[in-house]
Image 1 (spheres, helix red, strand yellow):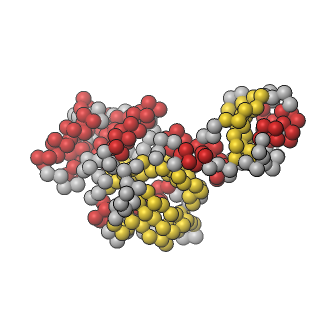
Image 2 (cartoon, one colour; image 1 turned 30 degrees about the horizontal axis):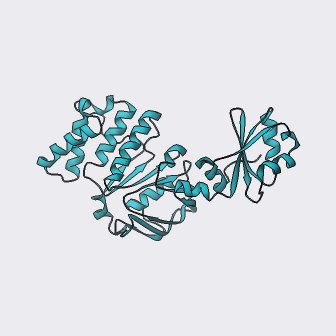
Image 3 (tube, helix red, strand yellow; image 1 turned 135 degrees about the vertical axis):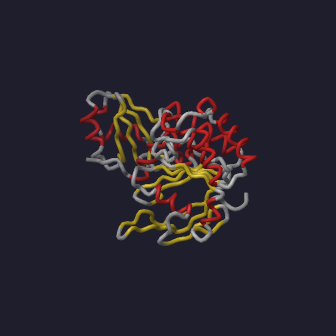
Length: 309
């Protein structure tokens, strides 16, 4: 398969006494969509900045597209695209002017730039908006413009820092279809997100908490490797029932979803349904069913972020 798109070993970044990223290891193949899943402040953005050479690691080594980072960061910048969470193009410029400006920054010749702009306007459904100022666009339109600007020079690697945090579900879905088109064409993509449904779309996923990767692999592989089983409980008086279940040693988490509880039980209990009924007499008349895990269950299981009390 050749050299990975990103190879990191022992990657650590400190800010004074605070460790933002600790001992990170990554080996990400080319041509796939890789995700960082985690809450705000867990180290996702810091990791992206180290991978691009914008931040120097306190420890560890990084190779991106075969280049040593940060030593060869300048050469890398010509081969990557970067899209930030906040819209960072120029509100007072039109859609066309923003894209033309970004093309010139990347040193594109004027003859080829015009054709590329027309191609991008069509691909990202921006042609009717070409002469509109960016400041007057909707959230979804700004998102498409930002993505077009990030890929104008056909980068080998695209880095996206929570790119869909300010758009509606339909625009998020359409955005991901564009990412799959880029991936199919050979672009390697690394995206940070705190949306579980987006994380499940990635080919490879790393779950981060407090600066550390708690688990990584394919979304399905992570769900298969869970150390807990998932049981849904349909019963009355869910609030006191939840508090009681959280006192049981084998219960890792209990969360209410409408009229049901979603309970994570350690796999040491071979028959979680029978164990729950025995350990909690209040479940005698309840309806219990073991269900397929979700990435949210994986996150809770491997990070322990569900508070018991």
